[in-house]
Amino acid sequence: MDAEYGDSVKITTKDRVYEGILMPRPEILDENFIVLKLDNGYNIGIEKKKIQKIEVSKKYQKKKEIKQKLKRRKELPTVPVISFGGTISSRVDYKTGGVYADYTAEDFVEMMPELQDIANIKAEKAMSIMSEDINPEDWSAMARRIALDLNEKEVTGVVATHGTDTLHFSTAAMSFFLRNLSKPVIFTAAQRSIDRGSSDAFMNLQCAVNAAAKFDGAEVMTCLHGSTNDDYCILNRGNRVRKMHTSRRDAFRPINELPLAKITQDGNIEILNNNYKRKKFSEGKLFSQVTVDDVFEPKTGLVYVYPGMNPEILDFYLEKRYKGIVIAATALGHVATVNPKYSLMGKIEKLIENGIAVVISSQTIYGRTHPYVYTNLRKLSMQLKCIFAEDILPETAYVKLGWVLGHTHKLDEARKMMLTNYAGEITERSDVNSFLY
Image (cartoon, rainbow, N blue to C red; front, side, top):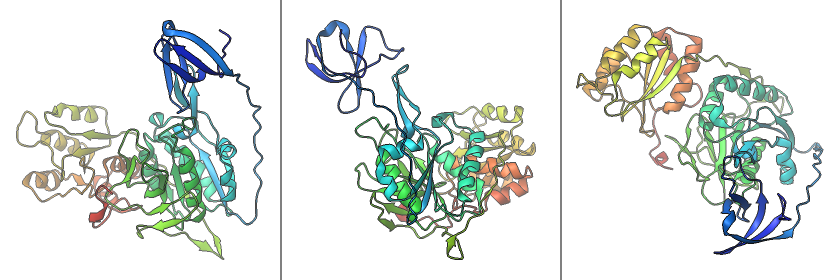
């Protein structure tokens, strides 16, 4: 056929007519299919034997890539956009038919010139990685990269792009690793890649740059869609947010507190929660001397309990000489305690006797643990000396415990640090309006 990859074509089959862009066939797809990208951004496979005719409506003309030189305007604040990868900085990978991290932050500006009316953008690519592959060593690199920009006096705030899957782990880590914050650190992402018509990337990025330029908070935050519509984004504290849906554009929800603010693409900010740290100023200018405290104990684990769980699972953490584990328990902090076959009490006691910190969080997500309401809770807290993590999210508790154990392996000191509120990860009293905000 005369059609080539990238051409706009009309394909007539026995059943119907399809129009779109002819795409390379992923290696994992059967060779008896061809791939067409429809106008809505989705790819479909069409079986070759059903095709009656392919007509080329427009030949593909590859555009010459010219990187836009970013001009500095004195009246605007300076906001670095650091790309750490993820769907927001991804495009089609023709070997798999999926997407991969590729676009740099400069590409964002090229595709969205409106950003230059908000701030002087410093475009930087630090990583090119999907978030499911991120690990604690990457968190350290992130913190150091972000701190470099924060400590430049002309910088008002930093935007970081990241994948959604483990975004809440990374933002929790940044909230502990970046000490003495005096400027906002805004993480943004996208549930749908830039090449799709329904992508949330553009609005999320524009709102994030507005937040970094104008919001008066000095916190690590996420900035993503607040509803399924393109009406506003919400700023959530980085250690109080969680991905709560696999694909919705408003998947990131605040847990056990209200969002800090709503923000629109035109830069309008509505404060929803006044409980946040404000920017610091020195002689009328933003002042920041951020330090990076990125110690992290890699032998830290996170375990979800479930009915019928074999207690011997916990032996792994003892045999591998882990220094601490977070147990995502049920409700107020319960684990199986009565039936000898399933009781975790003996294994937990052995872990603690061997100097392993055991932290109890709740897999219900909302609400807080309580060490004393029921007898079984008292056995865990008073008898075994487990650390009940208040209303800290399991993922945040895991990150915090790893950070704490990077400072000390002494159980009494670890308890004290786990129950200290360093970055808003603990609230004394949960706002009833925050449930399923």
